[in-house]
Image 1: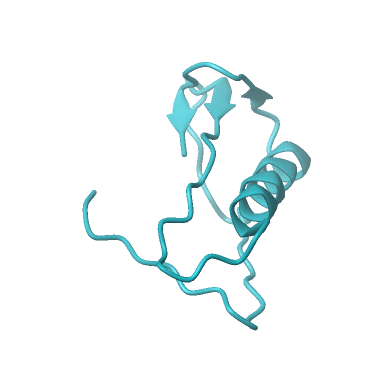
Image 2: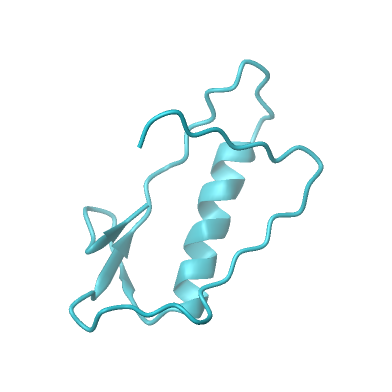
Length: 74
């Protein structure tokens, strides 16, 4: 995927895994650090986004979280 741009200034972002169908073969998930490459960087945004996605995945899926490469990768 190339050319992906995300704006999160002053906005609430909601995401949900409800209704998703995950193959029984998928057992693990890995989430890499989201690097903020914007010219105007908000301190902490990258870490907050990464941590929020990790927390959401841990709380709403039964997939095991791994630091290496999981069956599902973000």
